[in-house]
Length: 272
Image (cartoon, rainbow, N blue to C red; front, side, top):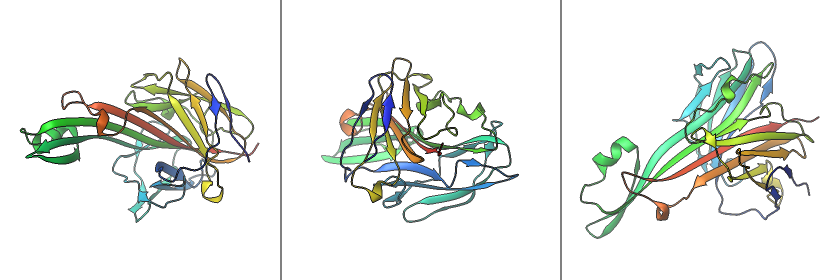
């Protein structure tokens, strides 16, 4: 069995049986490093039990943001959503690195009305209009999620790697399209643009449908929000981190909602 080798502060590798209840959101490009004058890439997006195997729900593309190497927004082509996954195509007209992200920011609420427990989900603007003023025991949670992958045509560039300063984001120290099996790569997490110290990070290699072990590695970011991974083999990897508590038990008020920020990325590691 191969196990990821983790480096850096407080790194702790673990090999655990695959949890049967876990659902993971992912964006999977057909390739991350391409050549040619105007190459295409096809991308699948889903929420599934097995990483990169669509078996649960499609990831909605309402929050899809594609950033070109020059910083401009680019539209997806041939977008569709099916039973288990969403898909779209992207023509890489510019040379350099693109960032493909699905970003969501929603509020969830639970409250009692006339003795009944009710739940609500929507935007911050809709909360005051749709939740009755006479609601009792109102609890509100804000959920911010970001799923990303990176695709390069020709030589990698760095402009799209800059964080936006909103919620939880990955800041690659090693370029995400320059990952090689047997070598170490360093990244950092920031929360609202500031180092996310002490943040638990999980990395899982693809193909878990065909093995009985998750083969994950668990890390913790250092004081600068950094962590390092040494890739044991080529392939697609899923990287994930979460900040804050989940579930309505952690909910705050309408004025000050509890907050959960999550991040996931698909990274391709190439052979040496």
